[in-house]
Length: 308
Image 1: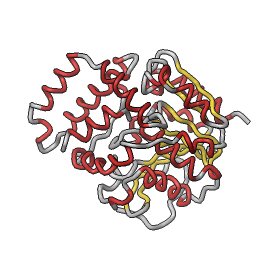
Image 2: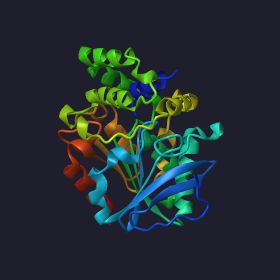
Image 3: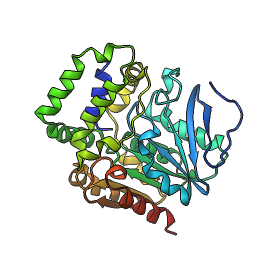
């Protein structure tokens, strides 16, 4: 997600099956992947579409139910990234890198015995998806980057500054009230964390009334999980994928809501960097177009995936 949100999440804190999983419609379970247990969920049948959520620390839940209509044409494969959602908190710290998160996607592809897949990455998940595509372009049919972090750290930081400036005094006061209430130190801080997340996402919505439609899963140990993502800091302080984007030769859709600063900061440059890239902007939407404009979002994704 945006740098400000990532830092905010970090600052809040300063059982597995060895068998090959079923790829049947509407299955779910755990995968032993690269030393940790990842939760997965499939919906529908057809050509596979792996979906990479944002965060860090969030999980696949916020895509649902809005993306379910895509399962009429494609098999949706959701998973919770390591240390996130319903996945295990136990992890090899050496895998807490951009490459490590990309390798998890490759291991999921192999676990399901898939040849080529379609890949959709949202926000922070877009950075993971690009990293995967650079390394494993031969295993991709199509790539969709929805509201992705920019390929370059300076562009990401610039956008983060713009988003931060959109926060209001009321946002600040609400956040402070929760932070000083003691709710985060209680036995179950989940509701307080959900409120904090929604406050953080508010400046990124075109229609803030849609925030309540954002399905957030917050485990009780969310704060501990958040702290572990500090291991990603070295990768996120100095990255630039532009020099290698030309390795991604599959058709690529760069998609943003028109209220995203990315649209006027770097979206065109980003789309043009891909050999087969194209840009689509959805009116009346911000960082979560599948929440604010689900019909337009799903139509854009289907039109791209169905194109021969």
